[in-house]
Image (cartoon, rainbow, N blue to C red):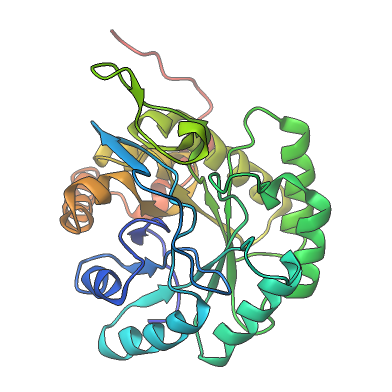
Length: 318
């Protein structure tokens, strides 16, 4: 297995994918590919507990990039790929506990991961919950320097992006910066930053770090996620680039998955739904989607971006 194909389903980075045990649990599932916890140069304990709150098909977290460090994953990834027929995609991010610059951190991790023969690398430019640390994705200049100097030379790479729905000018700048380096995939989107859940029975915030603010994921972000998928899809199509969009955010059943595909998502990553219901969600979604496609005589490629090819707006019957 060497690439991410149309209709593939994997986990979202940061969800039950930190330890070797968790990664092997994913490898034994019907996920088509595995994304690791976003790793940093050195191991990180992450933010203090409690740092995760789930409810319904929703979650908010302020994990603070808790991970084993790149050297540990350079041992774990080859072991899993040699034992299981899967793709392990290392997600990489930067840390505030090392002296190297952002770009030098990415360069070092990319070199270490290339040396062990990974099949692709996912750049996390959009971690929403490191207190006092700006998201790299907010700076087109930093992104340009990063991809110019740190992108892998011999393997495909993807980029996990934040939502840019509140800043269309920044979105255009980021699009121009990222797409000129021809990433294999844009993963849209990371969780919504600076969100909060309050327990009304105790009248208290539910997350300890970062003033109680965390990244919001799950069902509630679906319209934002599909909007971002569609914006990236349109920009990529307009440029006639081979880059694909991986939809991430708000996938919790068949309908939400189909919305992502119809907006332009080539593949999917599942976060909160997997967090709450376990690895069975991958097989469950595949069965449901395969049946839906078969009933209509469609192939998965027929529905990717179909909303862009349908000129009329749907009339919603209530």
